[in-house]
Image (cartoon, rainbow, N blue to C red; front, side, top):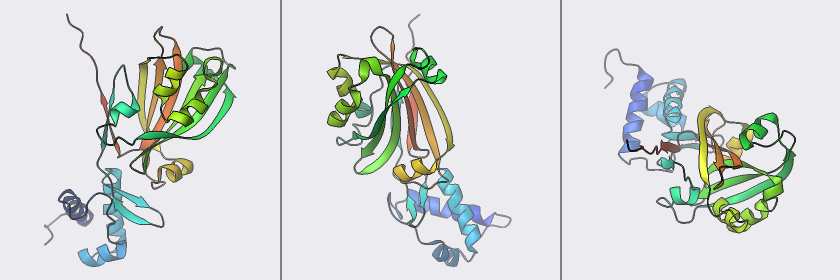
Length: 242
């Protein structure tokens, strides 16, 4: 029974959210079609659509064109610290997590990339796109940029190992550290939506990062995009003793 003065779509959102939390609709389950939900709650489809849109904005569900509405998987916690490694960060979720090389190319450093990598503008860079997959599900898409004079072999090594850390180790970089992490959200592009298999209207979480070698010299600028409601970024900030 509806509460007096309540907003109908918010009641529908709360009801579906509770059912998802209680496991009535488990992770990956497909929700009933809009028409079925409209009949269930005795409302029009526009009202149902408003409730579903709110659930999607919170990352509770994903609306996939031509397929339907699905309950999102639980959020993945991704710690960011001075030593950030994808495989280590997601090992608690799956031991099968690895990267997949989508494409690689050479390019000239723009002014922005030159500043991030501390190289002259116009310098040759090697770049490649890396899709991360956990248990068969695409979770993030990263575009990596490295100075070509030091790392021109990196795409081939990454394709063989599925790991940036292992590929760098093969080139003599035994360890590296995170110097900078920037995080923001924006609207997904069509290409990102297709690769990450989410709705075009779903936001993406963008993480920009600069990694440096043992001498503090920048070796990589990365730009990672993931479905906004899928990740929880946790910044691990060390506290200095006084």
